[in-house]
Amino acid sequence: MQPLVDAVVRRLVHLLSSADDRAPPVSDGASPERIEAAFEAAGVPLPLRPDEPAHAPEALDAAVGAVLAHSVRTLHPRFFNQNFAGPDAVAVLGDWLGAALNTTAATYEAAPVGTLMERAVCARLAALAGWDAHDGLFLAGGSLSNLHAMHLARHRVAPDAVQRGNPPGGLAAFTSAEAHYSVGKAMALMGLGRRALHVVPCDARGRMLPDALEAAIHDARRAGQRPFFVNATAGTTVLGAFDPLDALADICRYHDLWLHVDGCFGASALFSPRERHRMAGVERADSLAWNLHKMMGVTQQCSALLVRHPGLLRAAFAGGADYLFQPDKPHAALDSGDLTFQCARRVDALKAWLTWKAHGDAGFAARVEHAVDLAERTAARIEADARFVLAAPPSWVNVCFWWVPADLRPLDRAARGVDVRLHGLAPRIKARLLREGTAMLGHQPVQGGPNAWRLLFINPAVTDDDVTATLDAIDVAGRALPHPA
Image (cartoon, rainbow, N blue to C red; front, side, top):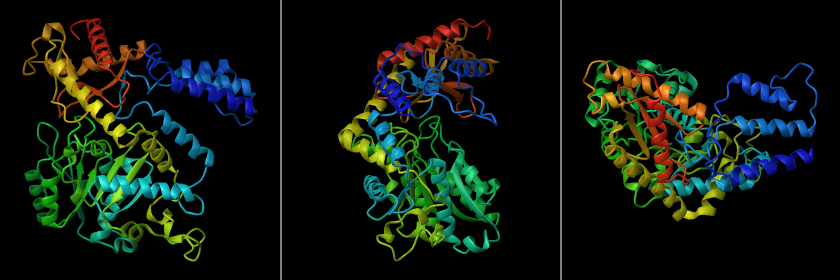
């Protein structure tokens, strides 16, 4: 298999070295049938048959070529579709290294270096959040971090729930209308029920309203529920909003509630002395979710959960499996597998550590500030361009806007049928962009309004020229549609 390894490594090195190349399409828009045909042509069909044979290295190399040809190029400077983008090359090396070692972060004896790296990265992240004491570990995504935080909050108020189940009367949790959908899933998975999640209104910028949270807490108590958990968001998915953490911390302290900050997207503002003000109040939170695979370009997944109460993870999660966590073995206190629902975990901290060491604090800060600057410049350009209307001022690295057909300019959303027409435009324009591979960006309703475009500035290779090309591509595709749309 060595020839296959050598061939694939060459392909991947070429992929990384051509990350800034704008000539290849972001996506070739291939249909399932076309993708399946490509693997047939390579001699390695996609289906796995009951009598699956071993394929020759040359055929497998051709199959890898098909994977690369028909996958989305998230490293392309005109990929704006999700709140992650092309991976940092050093992070890829760290991921390869971790995969080659093929170990688990559950115990020190299986991953001595990975364990120490995880502790080092978590300690530095906690220090950036303003915490002296902490527990921390890396999990398989922000949704799991939010679930773990909710479990910790329940354990704090109802430690018997581990053995007896949820307490009678019901617990109540609170989150904003712009929060990540994983919070509702966590309520369901923990048996608390989605109806026990109180969704708190937001202001026009997508930030949770403290007065509305206060009212929701009183409503829950009047209904016989016991409030226990508040999920604040730092960097909402659509608008990039930061909830007012200090004000929410005041409320949580008064009512003795756990404050969790879902900073999966926005916590990386802490890397920049200029931008860390967005996270003011995080030092008062009980837990923080932070995804380095979003803003910082570390390969997926690289998600940290930080907890400001040492020992609570073990108290809430420990199962004491004696085939893994023997107390009399060397360095048993460093085992982390009993601090989480998972057992085996990838050594994700390795790639985070390597990337951080390669770029340093200054490099991480520059990456964040480049993205914020691009977002602000783009918003100003859109406001000055009659073809577009800004849906909301940017709060982070998200820029949401509408493309407006010539016959609707200047835009009057109060006019009959305008929102319906705007809502239908974005999917049709995006379909054309995907066919052409010109650019890839998302669209979604903004606070109950029509579909708006969302440019997410994550990739440090993006320039103002890429923004120009993308806006022009939307305009060209929109003008090519039959009207009225």
